[in-house]
Length: 213
Image 1: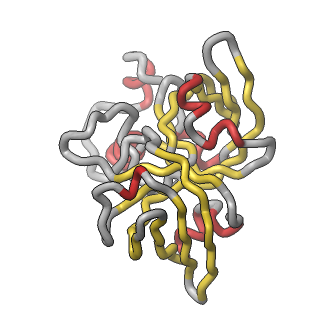
Image 2: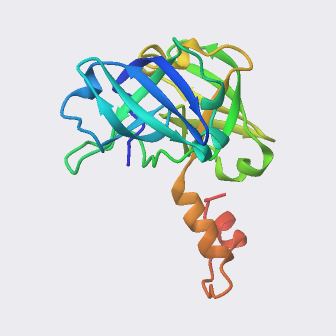
């Protein structure tokens, strides 16, 4: 479990494709503190298990599923990645609940620099738009962001200068792919409402009338 508050930008120094997955080596420093083999680190939003660790890097094995649902299959040596260690019971939840389970690969369109923050525009596959709501949360390459607006399968995320400059968001260029994780709470609500044995009076009309939609 993560918060979406990035601790450090690391660099991919090795990426080897295997018969049924891949192995990735990431150069870094801060996230290595108090990290052991078997611990989890979010790499561009994807929860990965540390299988090897040294003073300046860690190594993870990527499953075939990870390569399928993320943009890791096209990652290159030298690519910068957002890193975050798994939260502890005493960690401040400054972002939102991020599992590190990527839902889909999206596309970065552009960023607009406003007076005191940035608006960043992304495109997602249409089947995932329903999980992205205005003023809700979304994790992009592991960064917890607030949704500013949604139209069709395009959404804007509001980004403060600190987040923009201290993550890889500032390095995105038009048509770059990004890993997207939608808010898990929305998925639980959907599953509950659509379940065959649900006798709740909560429906779309109820949500609209009470300002949730």
